[in-house]
Image: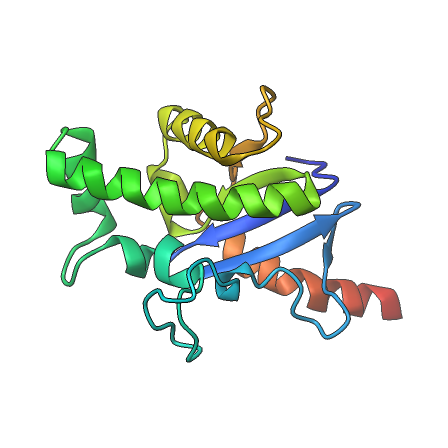
Length: 174
């Protein structure tokens, strides 16, 4: 989107990442780590995260959480799209966990969501529809408006997003 305004960006890759966008700018927060949703605890008794805590969103909503050892996203989604039951069940469980977290973020921030990262090029509109439904099922305030979108630049989104604060800092000096 040329103009994003306010949104929550979720980069779903090998690891999970996030950013909060306010007035078309990445909000860095007081200590520079605003938007690090990957370490938001969604189950205190959940799997151990690489940060040393248990049940972080990372352990449920990253590509590492989705794939089994040796699997690729290509093979996984080929099986999902072919209707292989075990893969469809795993995909639905993944979307359930993602919807749980997104609902919590949506209740606090009430903003659009942009899904980017490695997974975004595999997403279809049907996946987004299902994610909307699952998020609304968990919400005290279901929304009929579409608020989840697939990134328009999934292949370049993470490096561009990471560079923005440095580019902006440079531009502010000239």
